[in-house]
Structure formats: C-alpha cells, structure tokens
Length: 251
Image 1 (cartoon, rainbow, N blue to C red):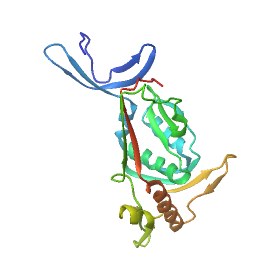
Image 2 (image 1 turned 45 degrees about the horizontal axis):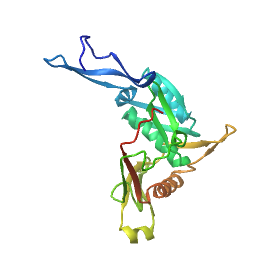
Image 3 (image 1 turned 60 degrees about the horizontal axis):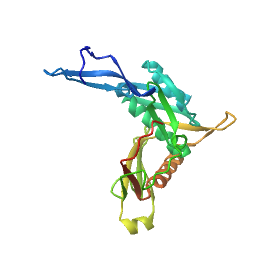
Image 4 (image 1 turned 90 degrees about the vertical axis):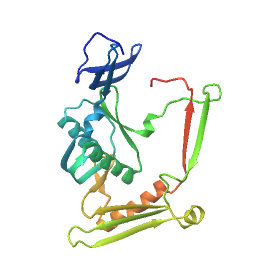
C-alpha cells in the first residue's frame, strides 16, 4: 500500500467489501521502501494463541474452558457453540494455547464424533460445529472456471491404529490396537501410532437435561474406545475438491 500515514505495530487493520467487514486484526510487522510503499503484516486474534502456558481444568464444559483461556489473554469472544462435552480433568503443561484448545476439540471429536471449528469472525473468537457452517450454494460448470477432484490414501488414511499407554503409577506400557483387515489387504498396512499417559484426561458427555455420563470408566476402556474411534475416523480414502474461478461469497 501507499500512504503518508505512519503505521506502527499494534495498529488495528480492517478489510471490508463495501459495508461488509471481512477482517479485523492487528499490525505486527511493517516495512518501508524508498518509493513510499509500505508492507504490513497483520494477524487476527488467533495469533495470540501461539502463547505458551500451563493449565489444569476440572469439571468444566469444553466451551467454557475456551472462554476462560480467551478471557485470560484478553481476547474478544463471539458465539461459542455448546459441544456437549464436560472435561473432568485436563492437564496441559507448557503447551501453546493452540495445542491446548486443539486437545480439547480432539476430545469432542473422539467422544461425540463432532468436529468444531475455532476461528476469528472479524474480531470475535468463535467456535462452531462444522455442521452449522454449510451454505446453500450449488457449484456448476457455469459458476466455476475449473476444478480438481482428488482421491488419496497418501495422507490421513490409516487402517491400523496403535496406541501405547504408559501407566503413570507403575511405569508399565500397554499397547492397544484396532485394524481393518479388508482395508489392509486392499491398500497395504497404513499405521497411525500415538502415545499417551494413563489417567491424564477424563471426559463426560453432557445430556440435554444437564446431567452427565462418564465416557472413560477406566484407562483401558478409554484406550479401547479411542483406538476404535480413530480407526473409524481415518480408515477411508480421503477426497478433496479444489474449485477455481468461483465468484466469492462473503458469508
């Protein structure tokens, strides 16, 4: 951009299409050249989730934990969808806020098979169930210049899940596995390997009446549930679509 105004780190940057705001963020880096051109790097509030911290949470709804983190770091909050997950215990030590929230959202995916998206909605930290983010749009040959449809098993496809738990009390290790023999025969063995510590994170599912039910029972039941859920999530061919030359939609 060209401007006589001095832009400094911390200045607010907004992008709009007419009266519709598309971006609200803060200047982090500026550089000036001889011809008067100024380069500005600005981020929305998600940039502040790169901060590192340690938290222990007990008996809190997942979305309320996100609200607590946002309030602690003085972030503006918008709508936070209810996840239906109660975090009995969570211990996040020396992790970025991104990783802590990511752990919590992974829990929602494991327990309820629901994917929640955290994003900055023009200056407001927002959490939405991806099912509530669909748009009534139809893409046809007349509304797109080109497209690319891809199917792959090269990334994020696994037909064997192995989880190794280290018992925090006895230092022993237990291995839990779930696999799909038919998929292995067709595609070869594609393994997802994870490690964990027993008795770290426990969860409950919130019922509509506000009551809760435990999902873990004990470490072994939780591990078996996790490997089976992961296999269900990852044991499929990944498909994606890239559209080119599609008119924009500000929604």
